[in-house]
Length: 222
Length: 312
Image (tube, rainbow over all chains, first blue to last red; front, side):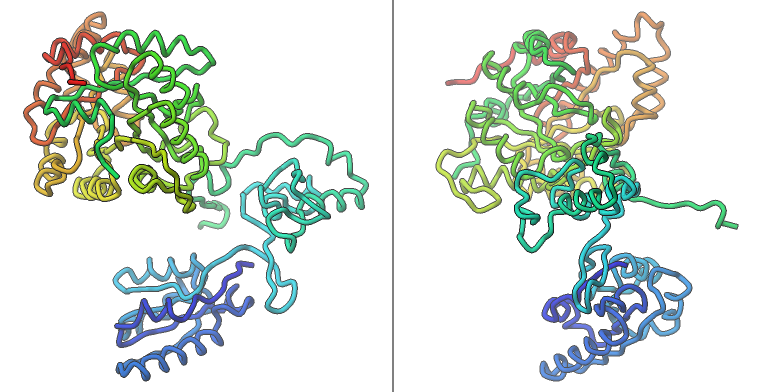
């Protein structure tokens, strides 16, 4: 799922310090799972903002809500009858949800309340790591099920580089070398022959490099 | 710190003359003699020569090596640099390298998306954009500082330029605002997109002048002579951001095929003559694409030859 982390409170206050009425809008999707932008976090942020306005002597109203998802219009529509009650909205959804909310309520000021970080996993509670960069052309079948694009700091397709040391990345010894992992996994699978086959330059058109992407599923569009 | 550089192009403009620049496209091979041949054709007719940087995302001999070659021939080169292919380390490194050979002009561009070129499947960089590249060159020149914070003594003495496309509509005001942003970043000269729609260009220039931007940046009008009606149609339909009015197509198509090249030159000459009187125009940038041999004729016919001599 998408992993995010709450923005520093000072940054959020900087955006809404002059707004009299603020709605904090959480999302029940990915950001709830990584505990960055669900109802619980919306309540915590709303409380912190109320405290700020009180201490600053500014009359204000801060409410919170959480939508099933902010990346779907039908759930965003749940705000239609109340969004005009507010001067500003803080979206705790990922960057996609925050933008979709903005698109739907074009006249309303919407601020992001989280930093969207990556597509990753929950290794443990509060410990999330990246696994996928959504390049649009999955090569996991060739790399032992471990993605070198997400897990090698140089996104090398023929790693590891000379800077890999004791199975760790040269960028930071806390980062496992993605190619060390791939090598060991291929060994386990008895597929080390794959490792020695040079991989040709990748076609990046399906990745961010090709420009903004879309999927059109005619079979789903009635 | 000084915004006055040893650039001959800057001096020509400062002396109040219409500047004339042109460009050469490097070959898609290691044959440097191609550049020398093109450069010799135009050297006496222009004040400075741009070298394009993998234009339209087609891989070519690099602009850095090319401008050094031209400099060693005694020409005044303009290093075109796009941010598509190199990150800030490589860009700054190449700027220092160019400056070490006395290159004094740079044109800061973002660059066409690789989608248009011969390596459409490649990754792009775009670590910086054109505005940030302008800021970077200015910082290196005026503060002797790299983006990473390192300070140094021998600074690149660059006359800083950029491009502007008045026709990438629909909003001309937006295009003028972007010029203002580039000026705020440090741009000192502009070479515009090829101009065919003169009324629209004048509308753009009026807004530039109304905002006083023409006093802060020297605008060189971009002129590309058409070789034939096929080229005119191609530019109208296929080249992003290009505005070729139907009248131009009709005029080019209205003469026999063997006369179309001549008509294209006539058209370019007329455009320059008309643009000379537009307030804020400080010169002309002749982009005779794979047609460099026509530059002398155009410059002579518009009365800009011989080029004025600058005092040493």
